[in-house]
Length: 364
Image (cartoon, rainbow, N blue to C red; front, side, top):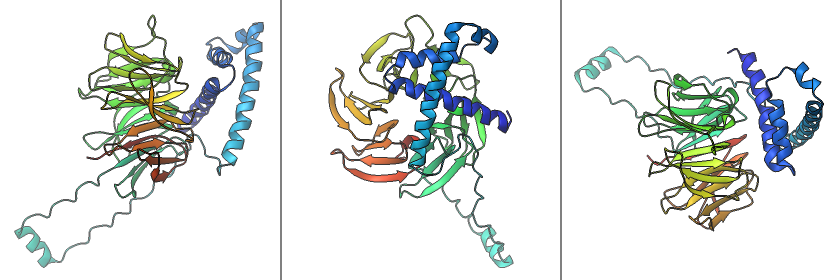
């Protein structure tokens, strides 16, 4: 895939995403979803335009896109310079100092004695996926940036693996990759349609929310599909997030029906909670409750098994991810920042970003 192909595809997907966002924010979601369905019709333009209803849909789509563009431009101008969707950022040159040659006497002494231990890999405490800047960034426990991997096109999710590599989800090019912190690809899966998230399971397989293909996948290391949910009877979903619980079940954020559902490998619905508009993330907590992130409402809620809200954060800036930390605090990915809040909702830490959609915190 050439850079021009990537750029053209990303622009197309950016518009599709904008329409999707408007579909859940606007006064008539059904209209927008119909427009999206019409826009994705595989018929040729000539055939499509021959139908009267098709023309009306396209006119409505053009009007909706126009409104979205105006709103987007105004929003971006209010926050600074416009950012490109997939323009690759020049990878910074490594600043590690070159080792100096030892004097002959020093070499002999080093050879006679024990070898000096190699420096340990810096511990990455926080990982941020920055969608607009097409990068993932790693920070130490002191909040200082340790590394940045560019050319992660439409970085929507990033997780640190046990081997020190990163599992990244690239929305703009429909790809999930395992990469090193230097950006080298060691594994990838591309039979996707704009995935939002991925995680590596204990069995070595990779769990993926294939968002715009309306399915959940579990993929084996050889690239074959081990398990799939969606597209079947009664399985209509638009998954923005999926995670495997400690019990081995799957927690799914379904923005199509504004709900979080829990299923097993057979597809049986074990638990479901509705009335969660534009739910972007859901995590099962150790106390059995569920932490959900509602992007358009600007809220993070902790709900019990009956759907009752037992704790919440409000007045957030379009949050798309939230995690409960071991110390009881909650870390949230908002549009232009990552913030950590204590149990009382007080901000205790912040990291700035361009458009952060995912954050993960690690303690070991």
